[in-house]
Length: 88
Image (cartoon, rainbow, N blue to C red; front, top):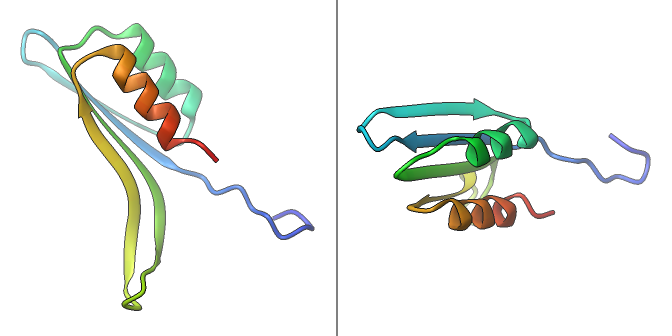
């Protein structure tokens, strides 16, 4: 943790790629460059992306996981969504 009180949170990323032959590959990582490289390099018919930010307290005082996720059918939409999910 830095001295000014800000702390960069580590996110967990799940990437599920469906190939044209129906085979699904799943990747998990906390390293964003690794996920971007897989997404750019692989060919797929559908992709599911989930970016988890960890647990936090809600207004109802319960601990819940905070995340963004979505399914995409083309590479450009998937890359744009991943960039948006990882904005600071």
